[in-house]
Every structure is written in C-alpha cells, then in structure tokens.
Image (cartoon, rainbow, N blue to C red):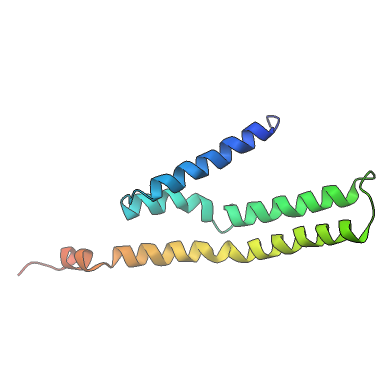
Length: 118
C-alpha cells in the first residue's frame, strides 16, 4: 500500500467535493445513483469506512504511550467512539439507494413506457 499523506486524503475530499458540485447540476438520476452507490455500500461505503477510521484513531491515541492521561483525553476518545457508532448507524443509507432506484424505475413515464400498446 502506498504511504498515506495529508495530500492523498485532501485529494479524496476534493473528489467528494467535485461529486457534490456535479450532483448540484441536476444530472440524470440513474447516473447520479450510480456515482453515489459506492459511497453508500452497506459494507464498504463511507459511513462504515469513516466509522472504522474514527475507531482506529481513538485506539491509536489511547494506546500511544505519549498520550497524556486525563479526563479530557478520555472524553475526547469517547467522543470519537460515539461519533463512530453514529456513523455506523448510517450504513442503512444503502437501502435509500434501493428505494430511490425503485422510485425512479416506477416513475409515471417508465410505467407508460412499459405498458403494451393497444
């Protein structure tokens, strides 16, 4: 794995900002859903990955021997873990994508196109 740097992480966040800007331009819903789908994957999407990242950060800070032991430090570690649990709860957003696909697939225009001609 290549070394991670603040610049590689900034590139990631810039890509997300580009996606947000693109979605604000009202693209075709099917294309928009396809672009967002990897971000909301139930197992590897952003909510799950970011939650894991926060847990790993909390562990790294807590287990580092140079970390000052104090109630404030303990509180900060607890806040990271709480945020991680809240993000993990968002893993269900992938169901929203399924529902949006169903909604888009069952739009009135699609229903008319799927009806047989008389």
